[in-house]
Each structure stands twice: as C-alpha cells, then as structure tokens.
Length: 367
Image: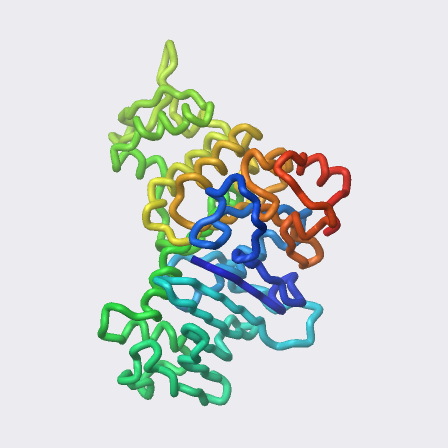
C-alpha cells in the first residue's frame, strides 16, 4: 500500500503537496475505510483547476519509468511548474509492502528524464544515483539482495530500480515488490474518451470484451444493482459480428447507441471492475461526472467495503460528503495546491452526527 506521497514543482504544484494515508483520527465508525493501519478510501474535492487531476497524474508518474504500461499524454508535457525557478520536479513515495517500508524518490527535468533517483528500505539507503554527474552511492545494495548485480553495462538513462528488478535472480526482493505494485496501479476517468493510465497497455473495446468473456448476464445484474434497467442480449450485426443489444417490447436496439452518458460511464466502471482482483492502487478522476447522487454513493460504498486495494476518487459532488459513507479523515480538500483532510480544515471536533456537506457549503472548512 502507499503510505505517503509528495510532489513538488510539478504542473500547478509549485510548492510541496503531500497526500498522507497514515494520517487519520480515532473515529469508531466506517472502519472499512481503513486497512492495515492506512486510509483505504479517499475522496478529494476541489474547485476547477485546483489540481485534482494533476495530483493523480503526479502519483502515476512513477508508471512512466518503472513499467511499460499505458500512459496519458498529459503525463509527458508541461510538467515543470511555470512559475518556479527550479529545474526539476520532485517525487517522493513511501510504500508498505510485505512488511517493509520502502521509500522511493526521484527528480525529473522538463523533458521527463530522470536526473536523480534514490531508494531506502526500512530507513536504510539501498542506493542513490545522479544521472547528470553519472555518480552514485551503491553501498547499500545488499539491503535489496542486489549486491552481486553489475550496473556497469546498464543504459545510463534507465531507472536503477527498473534495471535491478529486471536483472535480479532471486524471487523475493523489495525492488521486485515495488515494481510489481507499480505494475498493477490503475488511473482512469470517464471523461476525455475514457482514458486510463497503468495496469495494462493497449485498448480493449469494452462491449466486445464483455461479450467475449461471457459477462453479459453479470453486466446486466451490475447495471440493475446500480438502478439502471436494461434487458441485454447478444445479436449479430450486418457484418456478422457480435453486438450487445437492449431488448424492448417491440425491438432490440444497439446498447451503446441507446445508452445514456451515465450508463456508458458505468460500462467503463464495470470493465475495470472485472480486473479489480489484480489491481494494487486505484485513482478514479471525476468518477461521477455523469452519475446521479444515489449511484455515486453506491459505487463508493461498494469499492470502500469490498475492494482489496486503496482507492482515491475525485469529484465535485458534495452530496456524498457524509459520515454515512466515509469519515472526515477520508475526505480531502485541495485548494491553491494545498491538500488537507476535512478534520484539519476546521477547529471544531468533528463527530459522526455532523452534517459534513452542510458545514462545507456554509464555509466551515477553511481551505
């Protein structure tokens, strides 16, 4: 799991911004929102252009150089803060994987190239490397069982972590655990052509995938549970291919043609939901852009209670800012590149009976 993430001098984040999953209160309700001593489900609020999307892109920057998975073009452009005199963006991650605390940090230039990289295991430095001077400290490689690896022949622009993970011979390794976790991270959103980052590479057509995997009945049940009623079946189109249809009293209509924007967004969620058993970390940007409030509530509730991984949602929907769903330490506000949980945005001692949405709208939470 991710314990803490910090970023600095990246896009609209001129100064350091930190998302700390280990910072929570002793609330005795909605305990499913925590797992293994860390916040498991988070919802981030913020006005337009406050940095919600950029925070997700920053967290997932690690996928651009440690693994070969899907990327978003916005990850590779205009990454240095335009108001900063600093030349590099700074990324710092703290993971807890298989009982070990792994701290991984690096810096990148405006060309998205690594200029510095370091790795600590349980506060012991495994290595640090400066890509500009081509000098590093590798005296701690024994902490990751990599003391016998020769680094002389590696591509000097390639991440040291990635090189070690690809060349270490033993099965149990902190570095392999780290790369495996990053390999299974997933970011997606239902706007901007259903884009995604990480987890896999390439495009699957959602409907074709549902038909191919025999999930039509499961998909229909999922929609029904979310309050969307379609009687579905598979038909043959004019070219002899398979198509999903919505059955009505007098005719069968192409599902994707008659589906609403919200139903299409649900289809995307179902597509990824079928892969949730393999995911390590999920970030869903603007997750309910096309959803009714009741549907938004149901989706967060389902993921928070049953998903075996950390999830971060971003939204503008304050109707789900409620203690019936999560807790004040699960809701975050981002404003002017400052990120804080609700309980840190007020001097009041928040309790289960408080109406968080009403307090938010009345200006109780100082951003």
